[in-house]
Length: 315
Image (cartoon, rainbow, N blue to C red; front, top):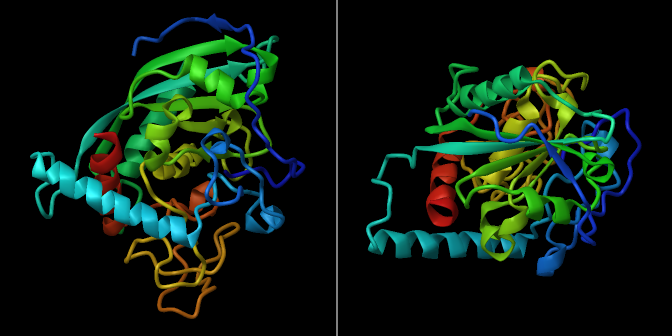
């Protein structure tokens, strides 16, 4: 999650409860919790105490302990091996390129606050294609993934607009299967929250990303108004950790070509080196906590990880 610096650090405990009445408007367009979470608590998010020091962002996914991280890697390897035995595999050296259908849910208040235009939504999809296509830097990798708008849905509900009863509204509105990216545009104290691909099977109804609506292109989120919050959260949805996952360790984010860093970035501090291991902090990587204007790349090994995670959990 990427919360705003200017907003108070409220605990975002996302409670399930009685289903609320909602009013879909407009229809479909043309188009850190403890590790070892119980299943029904997988979407609760408690920001870390030093969120302000992290560029105003708190936890944007559930915490993954080192032990669970190791177990996830083992499970992923097993799934890839099993799928390869059934002929579901990506040739060595290739990527699991795919076009991802995107369903956008605009969670407006009863008065219409929080609305975004169809142009902003189209621009957001274009940003996803640009960033995952490696088009923002000569050093960026093309992940092979593209995104197409499959539908836009608009709702008028004060609680959903503020991301209240999140598990309820997501289960009632989510579209598509494991391969479909659902984006809920809400107004909360963060910039975004994502689910991981390995959690889909146990809780498919909440799978997707929640994004602060003002972070879309043309929005009003200062330093975060270029649409790259959605890129960051979609990276988690596709299986990437933060580049500072695990701190200054050799394991770090399970990606060899992102230098280890001990903490997240705030702004765009060129030359930052927070870790004694080789390499400067990857402040331009979409999976750090830099300003949108600082972001410009995924790496080749991140592309490989996305490919493997897609094959294991979403293909």
